[in-house]
Length: 416
Ligand code: SAJ
Image (cartoon, rainbow, N blue to C red; front, side, top):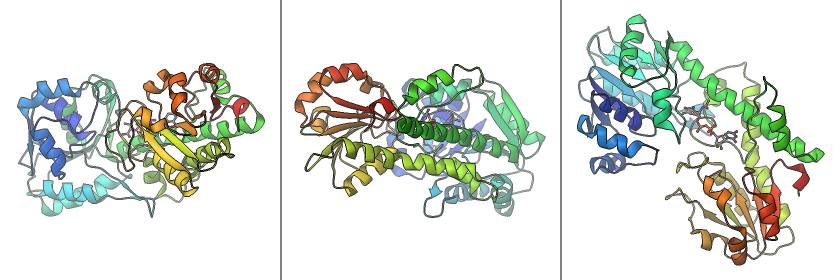
């Protein structure tokens, strides 16, 4: 089949490559010239395990173009950001991608929407645009939300189960035949509105679970217990699975998708409360860091990790940004270090430079590298030896042996 993929980001690019690798003729389209130019030079715009090998295998069937071509299938994988001033989704990119497709599409051709959208978007926004401009009436339309986790995208795209919600049976079946070419997990068919809802429910469930863990962490500190140990013990129960507390929830999905559900509903309470709890965690982290260095004049802290989560180079919605801004507003000097990230809104330093004359390290991201740091060597360059671990990932005894004052978010036995 000839397949046009609109949007070559974290989902569109690996999906294009998997489709091309399985023999389809894939045309990748993106409005971002930097992405297009990089790919034309066979340079990948972001890191993801296995993507380089996949690219090498797929490149013969994968062409990057400036505009959509007549195809059997049009797959939309453009971003659906949140308008933060209103907390409602911004569907501009979906609209313009659909408009591009509508000038090409004919009867019997299929549009697949992979981007996450509020329930009803496929039927109420996409379908009318296709019908208005398209050459015919009998298009096929399906929503198949991406569910792969950044950091393990390719593996999950192949092995996870997949939800496909078609406008009608023919749409579902044709979309299934597309994914059958590389998906090894089970493929579940449903209607289009249910598919949209399923995706949002999954990410909202995770956000609420993390909010609960973050609330437990704060209560644990109040009553003086180690919440990490308590969560581990609670999770021994066969029907309990509490996630980990941390510095807040980042990334383009979990910190955003719950708003897609709550923004057009009058019934959402828990969803917005969980968002509030998770969004407050950076404030909690900064107040703890502040307490650790309350007697220092001209304090300087070092942020370890600006990616939104461990072992990725993605900084979208990272809690690090809010932590840095809040800390700077409180008069702290802030330096950042991240071994995975190349470009960030704030200057990134080398490991050595980042801790020079610093008064406190704040581990924000759970990169594996941070559990292997050498406290003895790092401490030599610091002005004061403090470390605040928001991810419970360092060996506390090891750091204390090197005369660090250690605090772990959620550990009420080591609180400040
Ligand atoms: N986090 C915690 N505690 C935890 C787990 C995560 O604080 O126990 C934080 C992370 O550090 C990060 C944020 O939550 O800042 C989100 O990370 P994540 O690993 O939970 O999820 P994402 O955003 O990388 O990917 C999610 C996944 N959704 C679910 O697991 C239900 C993925 O499968 C989706 O495809 C992806 O959202 C998406 O694109 O929607």
